[in-house]
Amino acid sequence: MEDEEVELRNELEKQYPNDVYSTDEMTKKFSTIGFAAPYVVVKRKEDNVEGSLQFTHMPRFYYNFKES
Image (tube, rainbow, N blue to C red; front, side, top):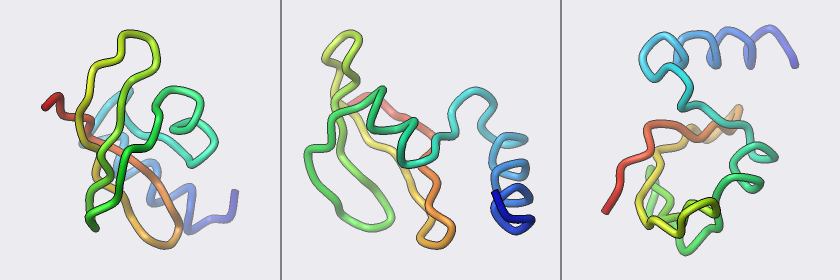
């Protein structure tokens, strides 16, 4: 990861502990249903719970899962 990515991830993790994902991490944990920037509608794979994640554009991180 580049410095900018590390910095952004660290800042997000301060606000959303254990709830920040890279694209690879997000796609392992969630199935994507649709995008409505700055949100993505997802289904959590472990229990099929639908919800949303916020995301940053560049660098791309997903965070703050909220159940629907």
